[in-house]
Length: 634
Image (cartoon, rainbow, N blue to C red; front, side, top):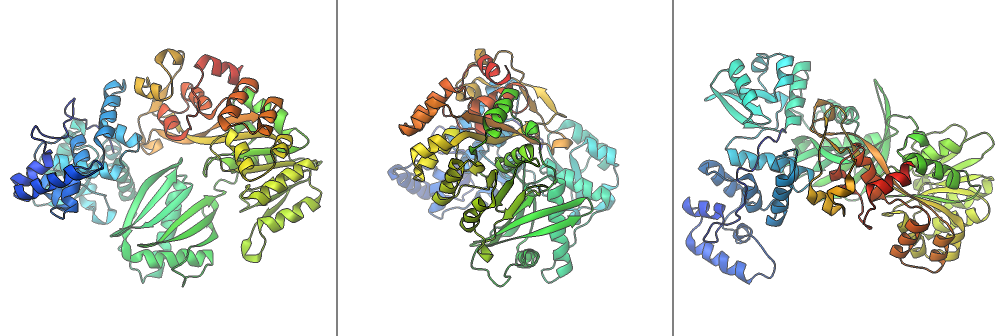
């Protein structure tokens, strides 16, 4: 959605002068509430130990509910600020709103309040649409091709729709009902008048939903009413969902049962994005169809299950790893798209700075033995980095063997084992045999427990090189977690040669990027002042069709490389704290933290400060930009 709708007042009042908020006053005026109920709620509120809003107390007393509140606000058309509504409806705290308004005042790019709230992930886009609809008194839509009048749609051509974020829905008693991304946009309003006449009813919808509906109308796509008993329709729906995810370069598909319907979301560039909602009654049939593809038990609905299937389409193929999770509303399904492009990334292309890449190769990958740990949370790109390392060191003179769950890329010339617990081919069983295969390099998909940690260390002690992944927040955390797994400190000190932590940050969309200055508040959160970032070129995308109006396109790696030296090894043996080991590493090994690497990449216009704040741990005050560039770029 194009959020060209700003807070209409420079300041915000959570309550009127007499202490009652605007919505409570409105409910009193409309005789939905009476003074006795409000006074009783006030006494209850005064006795609570934790802060609560008046509306929350009134709802808990069953005097009102959200539907009643929204209907009253919509009917009354009383002018209310969007921030006021969000707070009073309980979507946002007063403190969160005040922080967002402060950022808005300091923002040199003049972002709207709604955009700031979305970027900070304080609300989602559906909440914003709903509350904007209340504020302006317009209906809100999720345009469905089935309800769009094609005759009305055909009044304009594709070029017109490309220039205006609107779509006609149907003929109404008061005129043509039209969904706008921004019903206050003068350019779009004038364009609509020229095509559809002065008599129309404006509504509000997400920009992405409008674009998708327009594209479907232009291509003649349609979506008939899906019947749970129609196996062909259910099969086509699964195909449509998977293909839509592939087209959007999604990494995961979330099929989620809700109270009233079923929601589908895609994870694109690390962020969940709403795709579509469907009627709830098709969920069992849809679940069974996916279970059949995965060859799992379709009669089992009380236990979590997992499986995978191979999907071919005109442009290629994709492996899907599927998880079925039992919830109170039905089975939630998550499909992970694996080996989407089937192309290995070279170590030179993962995103390491030149000096970090050279050092990682010389002091880690080219070492004859030792443990190399790649760490980070789920979805941080660890597996991609491990495969790029394997591909780099793979040659006819080296024996490489892997234990993975699952094998995500097939690499010619190495022995890869895919773990399958269903036939007792477990990590433990595989690792017992792997050292008997005379390997030079052992790749362990993940250190999961003390046993796999001990195998990695023992293999390194006997002259093998070991590559593996670990779930830790930063590089120092990898060492500390090994200690917590009861691996002896002297063994860690003598076998681990390198720990590389990483994250993936969204890249600024090159098609709509523009320079901007970070706000003093954002810089302060990083421990910086404007003076510390002199010479930086910060950029931010404003949203376009190429990035689905997110301002981001693709992702870039951010890294923290620790090469152990004698000082760090001594600190491990002495079992110093993680903070002490971190300070020693920064001082003696030239460690650049995840936060610092992210700042350098943001200062080069590759990502944004918002992404850094959202994703990277802030465990240490970053050094100034000049010193960081010297350490990373030379």
